[in-house]
Amino acid sequence: MGRQSTIRSVAFAAALLTSTAAFAENLVLYTSQPDADAAETVDAFKAANPGIEVEIFRSGTSDLMTKLAAEFAAGSPQPDVLLIADAVSMETLKKDGHLMAYPEANVEGFEEAAYDAEKTYFGSKLITTGIAYNTAAAEKPEHWSDLTGEAYKDLTIMPSPLYSGAAAYLLSAFVNRDDLGWDYFENLKENGHVAVRGNGAVLKSVASGEKAYGMLVDFMAMNAKKDGSPIEFVFPEEGVTAVTEPVAIMSTAKNPDAAKKFVDFILSDDGQKLALKQGYLPAKPSVGSPDWLPEGTEINVMTVDVKKVVDEIGGNKEKFSSMFGG
Image (cartoon, rainbow, N blue to C red):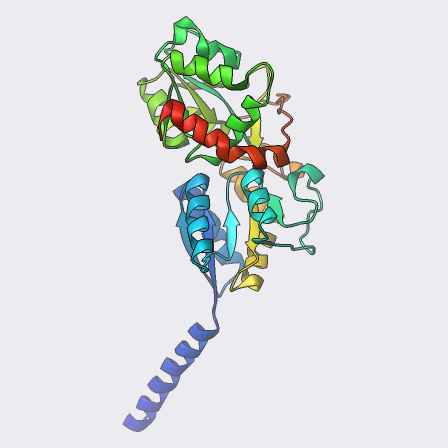
């Protein structure tokens, strides 16, 4: 091959690469998944969808909602697709017209409660919040009210609702219950209860023994226990709150086709098996249950009026912040 021919071949190859990059699909994902899970989810999605590049922004759901609000105000929302903690946040976005309906999404095998009836968001898993405690702790809690007792003074911790979507959901669910209400949080405050930035910080505190008891999402506690951390987890008898980590397409998505493929992957058997592999309860029951959940375990999930929570959650966060700090 002559020199000119070689130059032409190199130029052609460069042009082909440039052309391929120009037509490659790019997806912007905002997610509250832990870093490792988010990376694994994106890698699996890309393996199933070659040619789609994914840009991830990861933070707590409350932080993401604040970021989105600023982007809406500036007229420049960035994400194509969201994978965040709870239906309340999704309902808030839906109410303001920020979500795109995807009526063709395949929800076969999913319970109707797992996804929005208008198919603007779809639950990917079931994440409950219960009580984690260090195995060296003197008391073994069975009820939420136990955490307000004298034996638990200065020993309890929770993720802040200002950062964690699951904690914000728990807060709004609790304040609407006659057996808990704001009195419960007042009693916690008087008992030395503290709130920290996220579930990861709660796990670290309880596992290290810095605090003996923590409100924590199930999978973090159970997976830590499996890995040898001195942690036990209980589903309190009064019931637990549960978020579904929904996925949704933004109405302003610049790449809606790629976003639909992401939703398709999350809802597919492969996507649900990945959630199971990561240690979660999948939203599609037929896929199975994680090995940390003893066979026959019945989880009492609290009934929560999501639309009521949407209207109240902002005020609840403000009141919580005034009690426990931000």
